[in-house]
Length: 631
Image (cartoon, rainbow, N blue to C red; front, side):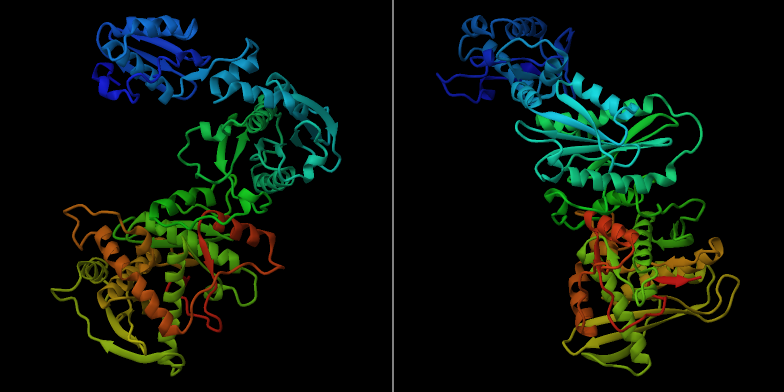
């Protein structure tokens, strides 16, 4: 900030009322704030904030007077020397305001406290005195199956150094390699605190080559998180070799820091990291590895939810950016529940392809863009795993996953609409269905640019001799749905005949565009990923997420962003028409009581990340042509 820009208008006080200079005696610079004097200003660096103040050549001198006041009498003499309404006082008030805005000032302590804990709290706490009292009043029980082990001893030492009393005790029910830290206030027993939802606890775990620190919660939540983390990290254990001597110290000190911050009312250390990969509102676990020695906070969506802040429903994903930000959480290499979709060596033009693994089988997903393909891959992989091994839930008969309720509902209704079209051909027209009427379609001028583009890619660039059949599916209520099906006319080297792609959309051009794009994905996958077991093709359901807030002036209907924005505008009416067409509305799905633990863990992780899981239409099993092809 340039201080010489400050003027009397920047002062928010009224004439005769106390200003920031009058109240300066209550404040002092935080411990640890370093100051660098510049030729025409000053730079201050605190714990996690910094500010540079620039002005005239007199600003360093002004700062010197202010620094003396902060370190000494609190500015009584300075307040008398700077007359109210003068430029000098306005400049001082402006500088003091910037120090407050950047959290570089702290209230003066009632007494001198020069120990390490006091200095640390002064540097980071909003109210250091209250935080120090909280640490003094609380005590922590360090529980472990081996209380004399290096992990338990290191945790107790770290707590002692932070100014909180710690006592070590044996807990035979804890797994070997885990230490439970439970904090209790005056008159409370840390042992009884395991049953108290209001108490704070954290578990630190150490396995060969890897370890973790759970989020802070009550003891039951912390132990449940520890069991979940230990289970997911088991595949990362590095058996054999000497343990790095720094790994237990890293984990134990991190666990102690998290608990001390919770007791003292400080922000959790994960919030200090400034890691954009961490999802706001979701807990973070610290995961550390031996080779190389490092620890990182990772968003943790555990399978068991106990604490009230963990049980409450999460808001649905509403934008593509939110959905993409949660994919790394679900696919985290250490703590995730799904394999990460990756382009690898697959082609990205004309359509973008990504590959992932589902239960040891290869899944390939394609779309107009790689980010859209990744999202489709995540949704389909989750569907396959949620329905695996359950009678009636395998294949397309299983639950439907989407990034939020609108996306999931669009996927489920399009799947049901494809079933309706298939049943119409077989003579089954039960439900509020008015029949299917053929709609002529040809790639002529005036058609939507995206339909023309993907049709041209299919028949000209890829050389597929294909034809498209479009039908209008009318409901009794008057809603209109279009179904397009791309069929190969002549068998070629990359196409084996039959249906290449289908789509159910709100307009004939949209249906042709997505059906042709699906056919392009099918042809590319046959050539570049012939061993893929599952193929996921795109649909317009993703448009509701991918719609941008604004499009650039040059982005006409030929651009993917503008096309998806158009499709998103038609999505609500399409979903209503599909619900009327099928006589069915998707409902939330939950795993059955006897479902495998992995299924429940995946379902819980999806819900915590704002994804929706809906039931498929009962009584129908669709052919794998709308969203997936088995290969």
